[in-house]
Length: 139
Image (cartoon, rainbow, N blue to C red; front, side):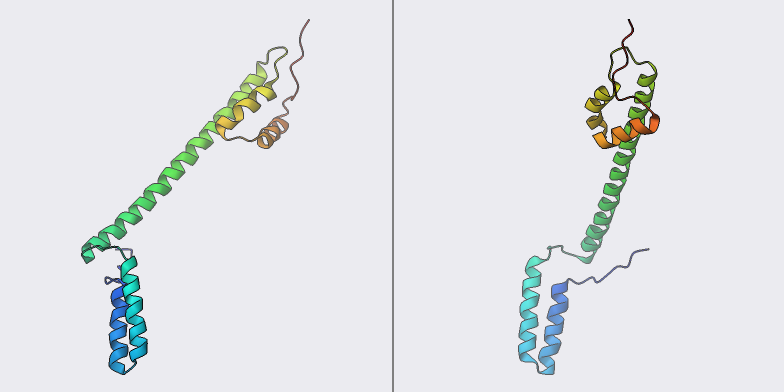
């Protein structure tokens, strides 16, 4: 068990025990305040029946968090692969550019599908030395 089990009793129970200790010590006002705080806390706590159920709920919560992290990582990986494919297709289309075709305008329209903003696209064109203008028409 790599994870500490934590307290088994709910927080309201801890507050109530402390209120009883305070009452036995002679602090009636403080004991009443702690008992009130315990009652308020109890209203906010989930109503899980046993310690096993609480431990199970805690482990399920950790598993759900791990699953969410893994799903986010998979989504990020897929998005990156899509952007890499988009960049490759731009380079390939630049090699086979038709006369009068403006590659930058076409890719600018497709960029949002891949999560690429205009600034990133402009930077890519500059880095690769691609033209922003239409390909010259041959006569």
